[in-house]
Length: 156
Image (cartoon, rainbow, N blue to C red; front, side):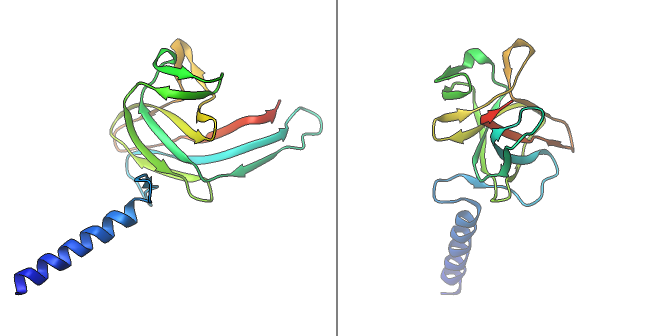
């Protein structure tokens, strides 16, 4: 009887821990504290940012952040210049930023490409030499700052 009770308590605790780590879509919530990986703030830029009298707004937003192995332009099926409908490189992790825009993801050493889920597809707006998309490199025992600016509704 005592062994059965222990199993029931263990099972209950396991289920509770699972559901507090994941939301209803199975996406991990951003970790509270990490020792190695990436962290940053997701912000939505909207309006006029032209020199002179800019009148745009920058707002922290809650979004699902997709972290892929380093991804090159030819590994993506693009719907438009900044929205992907399919990424063929390996998805490493999905996390959700908080209402304050902050997200964190514990990751092993390596280079990753980061996309954000928007209604029109996966958003990315930075390419480096060779066609590497929105790259961030994680080094041993360090946390890399990886801010994400969603700028498709901004003018410069």
